[in-house]
Image (cartoon, each protein chain N blue to C red):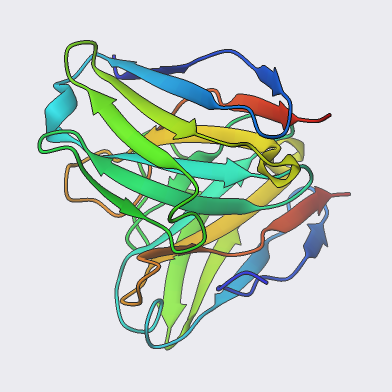
Length: 120
Length: 111
């Protein structure tokens, strides 16, 4: 079965760095892109970026470009989302997700979400 | 402000039918057949209900259907059940630099 298991919730202070993960199993990691989606408290879904693990190509939403880094570790079939300097406005739940087919534009499989809280 | 416009809330009684609209532009909904709909219950991850405008993934009830006309997509739910009460989000591929856009979400209340 396809599974996306995300790392545990994090509580950080403004200015700190953070790297969260999305460990995948049940399929060939490099064949399907991974998308990251943000959900701020009480708000809707926002696309953060897409990672193509095969060649590690990443496309970022303009909203997040320059603020976050998405990467892949093919040795562990894991995708990562990281910040070098967190801000309070980064407080949100972050989901990783995968399409059913490699060329699909819809997200069929979802991780359980990682809650990130940034507070002084 | 979200790129796609959805009503903030809709409601219906058990057994009734409802429709949720999602309005975009010719750069997204109107230009491509890549509209998806997601259901999200409180505290849970989103679940794909409709993809490519009108296709249901395996396991999704046929009470859910999708359609599109011009720049507006719609999700219809027939025979409302209490478990349908959730937030629903539309999404579309876009030819702009954003690549992908979501609607602001619609809260469905089953009275």
